[in-house]
Structure formats: structure tokens, C-alpha cells
Image 1 (tube, rainbow, N blue to C red):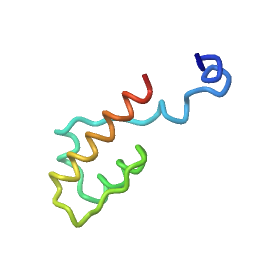
Image 2 (tube, one colour):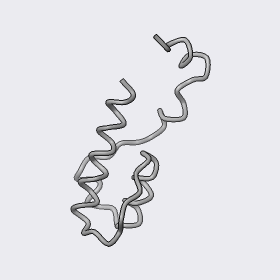
Image 3 (cartoon, helix red, strand yellow):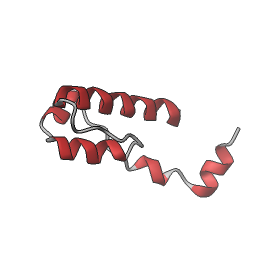
Image 4 (cartoon, rainbow, N blue to C red):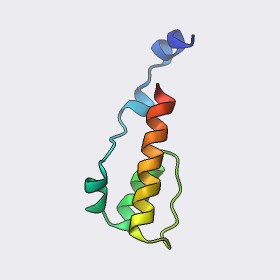
Length: 69
């Protein structure tokens, strides 16, 4: 329905977001995870353990994919 708007304004603001696998996210430190999650509109609490941060980041990436479709 709004496809013509996407074509008009482009979808470039969200298309350059790189999604990482859980394995790649495990290699990041907490600061990197927080920075990556912000790109998807999620503010992480670094007081949580790294596994919880990864879980929230993966969830945010999946939500972004669904929203894009």
C-alpha cells in the first residue's frame, strides 16, 4: 500500500543495518553490543550479563526484520 512512499523516500535508512548471528555477537564486548543494539532502537542495560544482552539484541534484530517485511 505504501510501496510508492518507500520508493520515493528510499529505504536506505534501515537497509544498511547489519545483522549478526549469536556467534558473532558473543565475540563482541558489552560496549559493542550496546552500540549495535542502538542501531535497532534498543537501549541495553550493561548491568545485565552478556548472554542477556545478546538475547535482547537478537530479539531486536528479528523484530526489525519483521517490521521491514
